[in-house]
Image 1 (cartoon, rainbow, N blue to C red):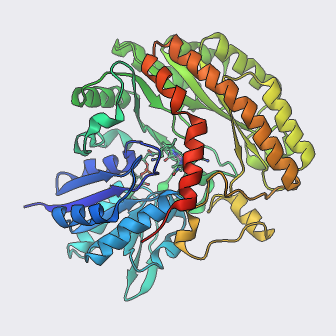
Image 2: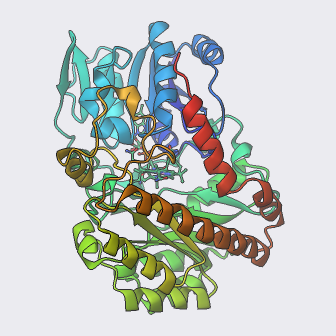
Image 3: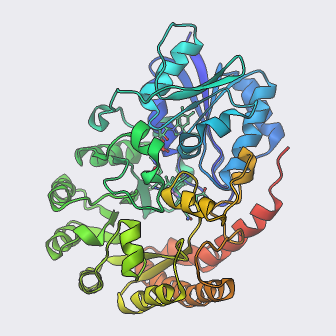
Length: 472
Ligand code: B12
């Protein structure tokens, strides 16, 4: 009989999102183990129920995927319950990847997988089964002493991976609630080709343990679509291949577009690109093969901050591209950050000017939030602007509105008032454009849902939740 493994996605209370990372892991483990996936995204986590589930399944290992921010207290809760039931608890995902030692200081975490999980977790499981194995890419405690092993040299070939185990997720139909128009999130890349100072991908462990940027053969997106469409009752008509960076080059864009067109499935798709590498030819290609939405990061209007970010966005080029995207009927989202470390009031004004000048259907404006493990986080710590949480649980407020810190040179009042004022206007415009987008694409269910469940109501709920979240 196969041994059982329970993989838990603590997720965030108000965001239902399929547990892609865990499905990728389950796919490579299922031949040797009986894998159960429990996704708590979009749900409250009730301790008694978690206990019951763990007792019923009785796995020999409980694996937990952890992001920094609101998922942390939820991950802590399930891990403490698992530990109290005598289980071996393994953490994986972005948070333990950047902070393996601090995570391991907690008695309810036995080991962490750093970076990519497919090969490393398999090895770790064999180790726990008693095999003598030289572990790589993990952190663990032996006799109370924390040991971090070097990165694995085993590169994961994305094209050789089995399909993510969508069939092992409980009630898979819940991720596709509309009759005609549903979106399938697909992960086709690992890592990022760039190294922006604010981003998780520029972290040392991410670079070392997750490895270089890789992108799967576009064929796999179509295969995954067919696999999931066969499993569920409603219709998928959009592929969401957003990720950190999808449209990396013109050559890849061409291959992806050809694949979509040649499939004859008439699918629409969302993507994430970069102004630096975006051309009119690329826009023609993607518009012609069903792309209806692109996410682009501008971040700042200041040349100095752009250089510091490692992300240069030329105003004239961005204006031209954004205008062309919209002309081609592609919904353009431009993302901005207010309050980068060292940013001055003048530089903030330059960003606001960019927002006014670069056309967009959505301007996604966020306050700079120091995410651990990034080069900017270090700048903030060294300047005494951020206090590093001493305990794992104290990372729960990171990345949440209402837990903001100002690490820029802009006075608090000016930064926050500009942020809320600009956002109030931009989010209202976005809401209207979003409704138009739904109508343009005949997405009526989404149109009506967005009347009550939108970014305003989401942010409000997340804020209230983060104030009330308790750990047992
Ligand atoms: C989809 C996505 C979202 C979705 C869904 C969130 C989610 N459930 O992941 C939405 C849009 C909601 C979202 C929101 C945010 N996101 Co986001 N998101 C992503 C994105 C693009 C893809 C995630 C994914 O599916 N990856 C593919 C799978 C295969 O990778 P994976 O999950 O990492 O799993 C692998 C390994 O980590 C490991 N592993 C994972 N879990 C486990 C568990 C065990 C037991 C083991 C052994 C191994 C293991 O094995 C897997 C296979 O190799 C990532 C970027 C990325 N490329 O990962 C950012 C990312 C996860 N997001 C990030 C951030 C910062 C955010 C926000 C805070 C942004 C913001 N400012 O608002 C919010 C808040 C999220 C929240 N409330 O918790 C950061 C996280 C940084 C961090 N320290 O946690 C990332 C890495 C982006 C980045 N480059 O900075 N996000």
